[in-house]
Image 1 (cartoon, rainbow, N blue to C red):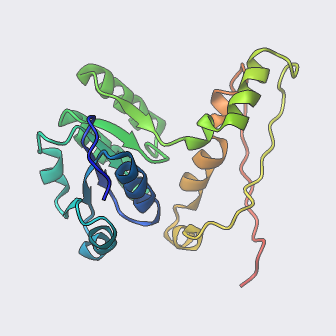
Image 2 (image 1 turned 90 degrees about the vertical axis):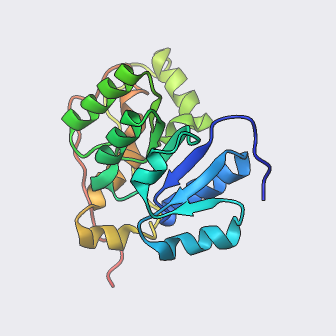
Length: 204
């Protein structure tokens, strides 16, 4: 068990594959106070691996707690926006996994809500902070590469949760933001168009 550091008390909502990554990292940083999931079975690994961390199946109860400063939302994509609104309205800072919302209008309202309550609202675009990506952005902003006219990227790794998401119809909302979230911040100009193409590389 890591010692509690002086800083924000964090609750992770959603303890699936990616949520457990947040549990691990926030615990190692010493800021994790609580893990929450509607499925009690998903909380068992938390209790086993991090016995000092509280667990709960009551999201509203977690958001009502005055000793929780910030919330990480790592639930299914369709629930991200609604939970982020609840967190902000409860006075919590919020780190929301990709995508923050399934509709642009929802995302804009979330930004407005965070400004109104003077809360931190952040999306989990980790790739933007990778040193290689930061260097690429610096070169693009300095126009050292000339005017960027075309960006092409491949997602080549096998995502362990992709088959489940494909069956539930949520594959593209999850994959697209994680692959190209930095496109808007890296080039000096926003892309005029974007076209995702998916193929079945392995036939099972």
